[in-house]
Length: 144
Image (cartoon, rainbow, N blue to C red; front, side, top):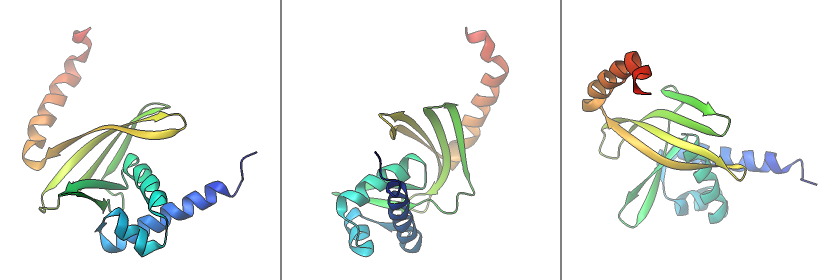
């Protein structure tokens, strides 16, 4: 039988990591582990989940992956394609200070969410993407 406190422990660890990232805005797994006293493997597992729901994102910088906190969720939208498949749209500012929109695809596999890819759209390309989506919306049924 599953321990009923398991989810509470998991939620507590995840919230601890989110608070750390919110305060520091960015950090490596090692920094988060040291700063929160959570095991490295625990931090890695929860960061994977936080990425899949758009609360954090990682960027490779040299030999490290730096994780960034995704703000207060003001500019987020979850599009549920079905029970086990979502698109998550959100906004970020890159390490170079440039804003972008991310579209992340996540699917549930073996009971946990996995990322299947990201698309990053910079501000200068938003108009082009919007125009395409608007033209497709009116004609989508012709593509059968």
